[in-house]
Length: 226
Ligand SMILES: Nc1ncnc2c1ncn2[C@@H]1O[C@H](COP(=O)(O)OP(=O)(O)OP(=O)(O)O)[C@@H](O)[C@H]1O
Image (tube, rainbow, N blue to C red; front, side, top):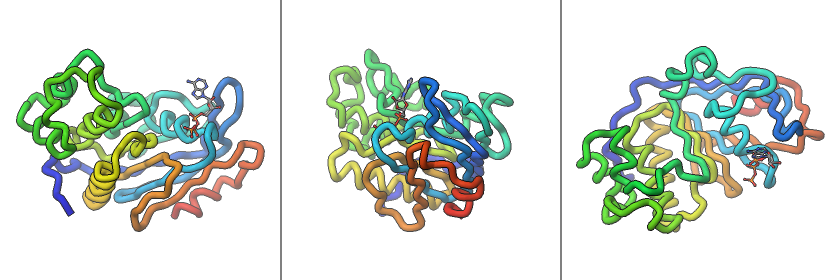
């Protein structure tokens, strides 16, 4: 497997989701969801369109607050220490989190002030030839490749990837698979939402069901994911 030259994670983390209830537009999506992930876990969240996969991922990222329950990384909830909480995770959503007027290099300089390191990461994803072209001129697949470089540039324990394969060609999807496997080997945790099963061993699956059918006992997902 290709070894990606990137900094090692400084420590491994534990993610705890405890009795979480999430609403959107006053509509309940998830009820009393509990699970725990430790070093080296890969969690695959699946379920039909609109069931709440992205909402759960955004809640774990700390962008939205659950109506009840708590989400913690190594015992810290976001409200108690937002900097410490968010410093441990990388979130890759549908919008790629790239500033459109800036080039890939300019986007990454605030995280990684070393241009050769940035170029190296871009090369891993085969987009080094686009290093100085503004993001708004790139195709959607090229933007996604550039966005994935952030995972290589900034070491984080927890990767939150919302449908990361969308727009990727087969070879880049396989490259992303290798990155996730390497992250796992380094003790990182990856949570992926997707409509297609992940090709990894030791993957745990959380299939979200409609709220009305989805009122499991609190231990349900903990047992399922142990
Ligand atoms: N920003 C928002 N404000 C209000 N409601 C939202 C927002 N984003 C999503 N929703 C609603 O929350 C529900 C869950 O959406 P979410 O994006 O989490 O689903 P999903 O399972 O990720 O769907 P998909 O598979 O289509 O990506 C949907 O009914 C959606 O309309």
